[in-house]
Image (tube, rainbow, N blue to C red; front, top):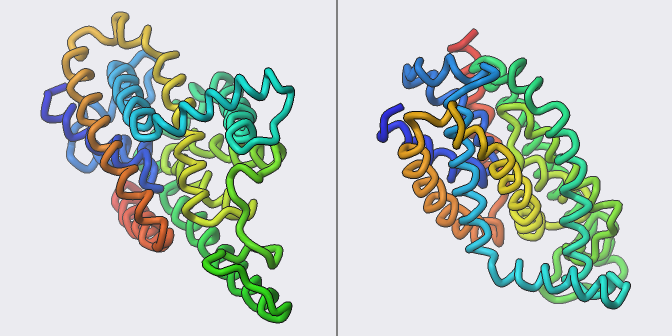
Length: 303
């Protein structure tokens, strides 16, 4: 692997892990489109230098998320310990801490049990392209549900003659739920949706956002919750695979992995900064269309 490839893949990882367009899918499709056959052929092998390289990229992305949300994570960690002390999850950051915990457990268990099998079966350009199309459909459904719920809620509240200034209306006719008001059961549902991201082409952030929307969050809160949920999953997955990078699979690519991780971290930090602002007033539509178009073109190309 060249350093140019490492930088390109690092930037690609940092952007596509947070943009709802699937980092794993792009990590499979783009090398194939660029003719990087030295990488394409190693993706589905049990012992792969490319997968060891991806470990570094994931760690770099997770570190960037930790840095961006450092104040939030400080409050979340504090909320966890005060919830233990108080034996309560009533305060916002106490509840958020437990939402992240219960939302992370299902994908962690399934990932440990099935990640290798799913990677061998589906981490191929054609399969990733098909799943990228499916990702586009998921995003379209999520955006349709959000808009329909908001419109229906606005009409319902208007009939009641009460509308909180500046509030976003939710599916129940009141307002969109805040993250800290989600029940732990809903947190499990949102977090469990990350399991779908084990299929190359399905975006972790995208499917988590859509599930959050189904649970009553607006796009801004759904995006923030998705990024917070993704951080421990990406970081722990990377740390769990660190022995691969330090072992024989990492021979000859550790320097490239470091450079790629730095590139991924910078790209991820800029991406989350952009997306937090984007979802304050914009929607999932552009990412849905992108997934459908690129996925459709690639299905035709690789078929």
